[in-house]
Length: 215
Image (cartoon, rainbow, N blue to C red; front, side):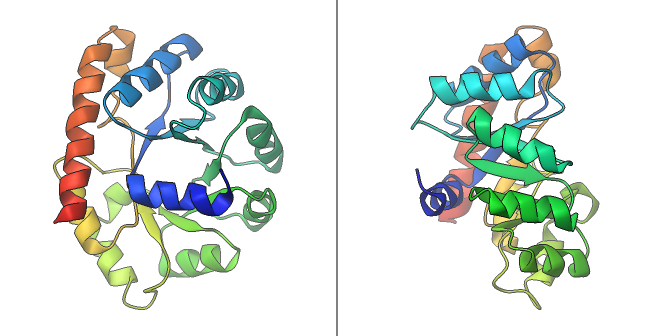
């Protein structure tokens, strides 16, 4: 899948599950449960134990079936490791120039974090394909609408504070996609082995996203 195709698929899916798994084994099962529920965008964060190995395993198991990325990149060496693990997109919570430039140079879809108008514009000018609005819980959906006043062409994706109950508000405000963590795949359910429950939550979340996009 080319970079353009990956970016288009992210836009089409509209939803990325942000995983901070408690262990490699449970993280793999979380992915399985999410995919069973219809989630087609997965981000394995570096806070997950053995994140690169987990990503490589997921990449092999779901090649061509999902769009897979690695998140919480904070150091330049993280970029090359993520690429080797099979990531199709890269995500950072920050817009540190050296890191973002390395992410862009990888040739993969790049999502870098920003919050203020100055950071949003700076991140876009660094070459990010999507600006990750983080933490979205601090500002709410109306903030995206406000940012699109001066920056109508910058794709914004909130992460943090996104739930099935408010996802329609985020899309109505102009989000290109949303990133969801604990509300979509609670770690507590994984630890207790309730993967059927995770699948159910995922199915409802995907339905909410699809309804929001149609509305």
